[in-house]
Image (cartoon, rainbow, N blue to C red):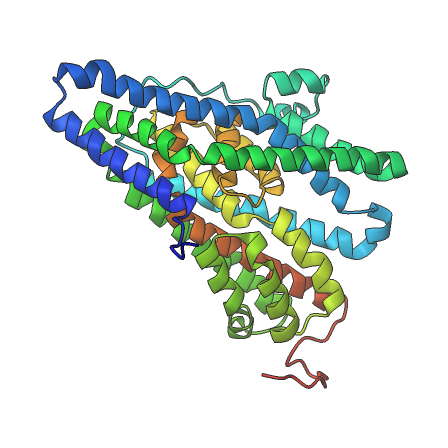
Length: 421
C-alpha cells in the first residue's frame, strides 16, 4: 500500500486556480490572436466552468432545504430545551448579523473588487426592496414554487418551520426528519462527487476571466484577504472579548489561552466538525464549564454558529458586486445580512459547502454566481480565518451561558476542583 499522502481538495482547487490565472494572463498578453486558442481552447475552458456552475446550482435548493430541516429537528423539543436552549439559540444567532455587518462595512470602505470591471455575467442586481417587504416576503405562499424559483429566503423559512413541526408531530415527525436526514446525506455525498470536479471547473472559469480581462483582476485579491482577516480580528475583539470581559467577568488572556488548542486545530484543519472534540475538551478542562452544558451548546454551535462564514459572505458579496460594476443599495446590503444569517445556520461541514452557501447568498442578492470563480482559488486562505472565528464563538457563548446559570468556572472564587495540568 502506498504511503504517499493524497493532495487535499482545497490544494487541488488552489493549483487549478493558479494554473488558470497564469495561463489566462499569458494567453491574454502573448497569444490572444492565435486562432486555435480563440476558437478551441478558450471555449473549452468556458464549457468546463459552466458545467461546474450548473452542478453547483443543482445542489443548492435540495441541500439547503434538507440540511435545515434536519438541523431544526435535531434541536429537540423546544419545551424540553427550555431556558438554556433559548439562551443558546439567541446568543448564537444574535452575533451573526454583527459579523456580516462588519464584513459589509469593511467591503464598503476598502472596496476590494473596485477596478476589476468584469462585464457580461449572466446575472444582474435586482431592484432593492424596502426592508419591511423583505421580511414579509420570507414567508412562502407556495413552497414548491419557491423551490422552483430558488427563492432562498422563502426556502430557508419553510425548512425551519418544517423541522420544528416535525418535532411536534411525534413519531411520524421523526420518520419525516429521518427521511430528510437521508436526503441530506445523499446531498452531502453528491457534493463530494461534484467537488472532485471543482479544480477543473475553477481552472476553466478563472482562465477565461484572466484571458478576457488581463492583469487588472490580480490586485483586488490582497484586499479581499485583508478584509476577511481584519474583519475576523475586529469581531473577536468587539464581540467575543467584550462578552468575556463584561459578562463572564474574566480576562481575555484566560479565555484565549484556554481555547488555544481548538483555535490552532480549526485554523489548520479548516473544519468545525473535526475541531469539535478538541473544543469540548478545552472548554471543559481549561475553562471549567460542566460536561452537561458543553455537550449541548458546543455541538449546536458547530452547526449553527458560523460568524466567520457569515462575515466572509458579506465581504465576498460586495467584492463580486464591485467586480461586476453592480451597485448595491443599503436595502440590498440589509438583505444580504438577513440571507447570510439564515444561510449560516445551514452551512454544512463538508468540502465546498462555503462556496455553495456563498452562491446561495449571491443568488439571493441578485448577483452573478460566476463571481465565486474569482474567490475559489484563495478560499483555502480565507477558510482558515473564518473557521477559526466560527470555533471561537462557541466557547465564548458557552462560558456566557454557564455564567448565567451560576456555574463556577476555572479559577473563579470558590472553584475547589483539582485540575491536572
